[in-house]
Image: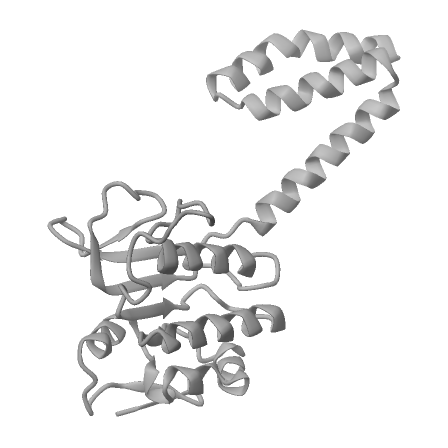
Length: 235
């Protein structure tokens, strides 16, 4: 029975291998090669165990990867905001506004990565800068920071504490911090209020309905700005 299974797998190997090569899936090819060698030269159970370990590691890396977008106001480009993580060399920095678009729940697994990225942007001037690099711009270069919370359906306690520290640091440097696109049916708004994040921003007037309103507020706070407070819009 084992020989039949092995023969069937080897018969499918050339087609699968060519597919993986065409996709340039070098990491998958390396894992398959290691599992095959361990299974042949040690034991099949060891090869299966090694495959499970690599699969778990891949799942953990995928789950902890931060998918937060950092958008900066750009000068001379067709789009007013560009993702400086995907296109760091194509963005001409503007000191006016930075939009932090959070498209996933904020939890202890990804908040540290977000903190590191924002620290590098604020203190070193670039997301890709090494933490030991000398500062390349003034810490107060970005006057307005907008957190677009449209995809953040959950913010756990660890992420809340870290987010409060981020907001306080920005405010201490003289920056205006605004939150927008918060789902009023989720617990996120209540979490921001109870934790003191809204108060640290300057009050409920800095938690607004959408990004357009947040950009207006970043430019100039007027009396007719619609505000979200305790699940209600006010003017």
